[in-house]
Length: 306
Image (cartoon, rainbow, N blue to C red; front, side, top):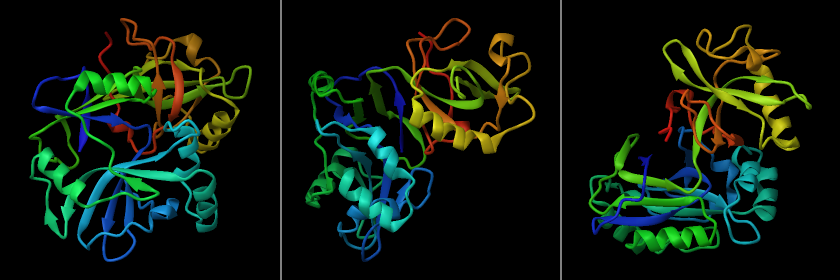
C-alpha cells in the first residue's frame, strides 16, 4: 500500500508515525528465517543477514522500512545505499557489522496464514504490537494520536517527515490511497533520467522529466548534489543505457540544455529535492538525492507546482 503526498490531516480519525529515510521491505515467514522482498518484488534477503534471526509462525507477512542509523541516531540513506544491492554473503556479513540495518516494522498483513489486510489500521496495529517484535536489528516504531506534536518531534530529530494513517483504513496492496498521507518536510519528487551533460567534471548534470504519451516532458537539468561517489555510480548505470535519440518529447529540451547531451533509455528514476516549480514546470534549485530502484518510470508524475 502506498501513500499520497499532502498536508497534515488532523482529527480524531487519524494516527501518526515518523517517516523514515530507508527502503520498503516485506518479510515473509515460511518456517525459518524470513524471505525479504523489495517493493518491486525483488528478493533482497541476502542483503540483510542480520534479519535472519527474526522468527515468526509460517504464513506471517510483515511490512516495514529498512534503515541504517548514523552515529547521531538518525536514518542515513547514504549508508543504506551501500547495503541495498549487495548479494554476496561475505560482503553482506561485513557490512552488517560496519553499517547495521534496523527493520522498522509498521504493519502485519498476514498472521499464521490469516489475512489481516481487511482489518482496520488500529486492529492491525494491535496485532502487530502483540507479536513482541523487539530485537537488536528489528523493532516496531511508535504511533501517535497528536499530529502537530508528531511533526514537531520529527523536525526536532531531523527526520524526513510524518506518515498519517486513517484509524479505520484497510490495507490496499499495490494501491496509492488517500487513507495514508505522507508529509515531507522538504519538497522532493521522483523523475526519469533521459540524458546527461558533461561539465567541469564528466557528469555535469542530469536531464530529467516525467512520462507523457509523446515522450518525457522536460523538468530541468540537475547538477547539484552529485559528488564524486554519486557521479561514479551514476555513470556506471547510465553509460550502458546510451541511446541514439532523445527520449524527451519533440522540442521539450531547450537548445542550451540539449547541447552536448548524452541521451539514455528512460529507465532510471532519481529522487530530486527542489525549491518549487516555475510556471513551465521547471524545477528551481534542484539537487540530486539518490536513485530510486524501487520505483519505475511509469510511477513518476508531477507534484503540485505551488
